Length: 101
Image (cartoon, rainbow, N blue to C red; front, side, top):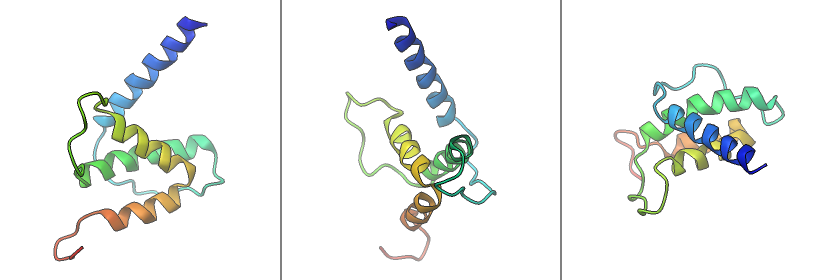
């Protein structure tokens, strides 16, 4: 059982690291609804979150005891709940030239 937990953790870390290096283009497809299949939400969110993180710098450096992929993991988990709502909220956070905030 312990080996299964370790294997699952290693696979999750590897896929998160690969996602962090994904192509940083905003998905062309519209965000799926919250009721869409989990696989559809996850696939769209992986692309969108990689793009979003590239567009928005971290507010402050992460503490030394936080994994480098922590922000990516948190954003991805938030997105998968309701991709349309997540997209609406995060688009408002992206700095735009000429916009005061």
